[in-house]
Length: 303
Image 1 (cartoon, rainbow, N blue to C red):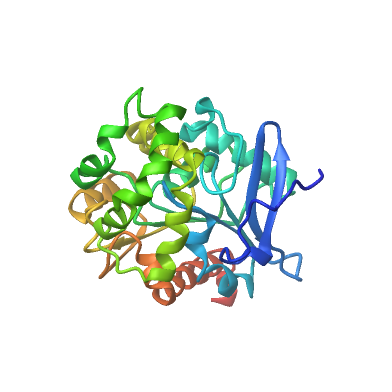
Image 2: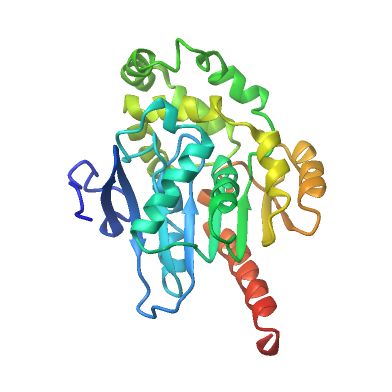
């Protein structure tokens, strides 16, 4: 399939040298891909959370690419993946379209899927429709609980038929930069982001398609049904839980993990919802630990 135009990606965008674009149906995908020279190297799929994009993995992508084939996507309705219809923003539909992208890239089943927040939910939805599940799923502050009061305070009033319309998204895109809402949202994650780390978010939320996609993605999530189905997945689970995350509080999250993923490895770390952006080094350590565990399970003679 021919690649489409990449001119929509800003020159300064994190890891832009790895950016690619591919049109499948009405979706014009943006993703970042690094193919390891060893064609037998495992493949890792990185899926960002609601309101984010592939830039969320900027400090994690290249270190992983040293030993793995790595792909980070902008989900439909997010970042620079364009053309999504409202009916394609439900998590099940996103998973189906993501499957089509992976097949087009000849990555039928990634060996490892890593998701942040609602991206973790997307890894589960995708795993349920693949020919076989990945060897491992790593969830970073997974959104297995309903949106918290902070979410409702900032964006809750927007999740309704009027606000999830394109007209309201366009209005917000033009007014949000002057309302200081993005900085307030980022601050509410209890994550200390630098000015440089905030820049991509401020740019993304100037795009009405990004706002439209983010609002509708959250509005269309059916977490209980997803958890019920995903509990049957036979794969290796690791979850990172940030102790000071007000968006996905551990007091609510841990009981759900124990109920639906009783054999999962759970790492509790000091930090907020965007832990992986603020603490990429520790996040990489946790990912590497999980990958070594998977390797030892698959090849116990080398453990």
